[in-house]
Length: 267
Length: 256
Image (cartoon, rainbow over all chains, first blue to last red; front, side, top):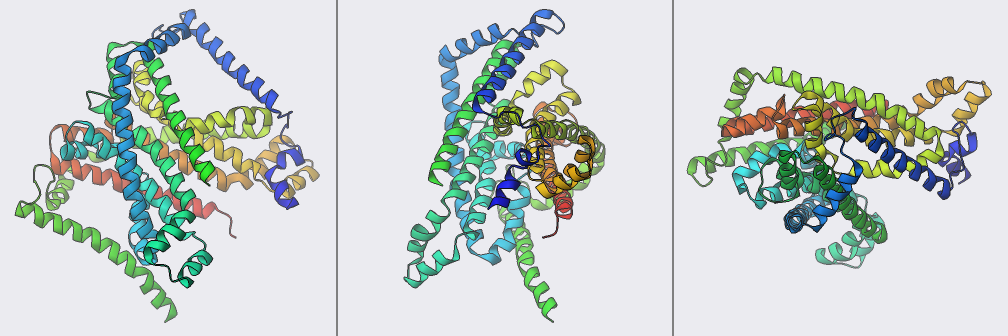
């Protein structure tokens, strides 16, 4: 136990790394210092005239544009479209991913036959499938949902298959000794035991689905936040572009945080 | 006897997987020829295979691969050049680490690639935009893994270094870096995967450069077999890239 503790904090025990106080107060002070330092540098650079003013707009104009965007009904209309795309992608991709993951994880033979394909295609750039999705589902919301679901599927399937294989064999034997039916085995043994990897997979799938849906909207769309970004870019309205990107990053971060909390509390 | 039976055991699922894929293509070909599936939406698999030759000869695929490879190599090198020192810095200064590591983890999960219009304004429609965007996308995993790898170095190794009175630089070069290399390479593999996704994705989105642009060009021309063939080609290149990275990672991992 002691050895494990030492391995975890070698810097503290060996002193090669400068330890510092490491308290939450100093951490917050460093964070505040970095934040304000960057803000002041940005503002100074913006006012210096060294760079083209529109490339580095004043923080005040970015802040004003954020308020303007948040107060605009157009923003909420586009947010609604993107949120629907992400939600539908996540629901479809996770549903398929969990099903395929359970099949591949439960059967060693099928896993050996098909999982390598899922594993190696998973990290390929999914956005390149967008032309195919447009041909299959048209230029509307459906093609973005399909692409988002495709992105989400691989992550969830791999995570579920891995989780399925790691279910404690004792639990499975207990279920069998009670002569549980396949449905009872699935609902009483496998699904509760696999909850953490499945939820982690869904959380990762949310991230990939969000990025993919937004990128697809920037490529070809007439609604959604990605479309809005490209409209603002076309107008060369840089403060609004920065503002909208900040809002999108915050929304994605909050979504990820909520799913993280769900995963954490469920684990 | 036992080894040949084991090899046979391993070969059967592989054969099943490959034959399922081939079988699916054959079924699709039949359905398309029977008119059950629309030929204007899904091309004949045989046409896609034939289109590969055309893509290679007429679309200068090797030239495009060179462009993508150039962007990849520059981005991958820059990710290491920036990421490893930043990760080492965070290892060395604990306060700084506890202050910014959460931000870096958040950066890894953020849809940073969406900021490409910003870089289009800054650098124009050029490979620089692709490279800068890809470096930003790929930086977080390597920083996190470098810090993690250095923090995981066994204390006994650091003690040996200290007993030999190594300087900080010697300690880093001779003890910490070699011991943390397997974990750092895991970060490199993750970062390079992000870089590949970003390079091809941005090429596709801004219609510039190599393989990503090829898919965009072919789809805009409504060349269905060509588009499917090019997508298949990019998947093959990506899979080969990941397999090589995985082999190197396995080779670097210490034997248990």
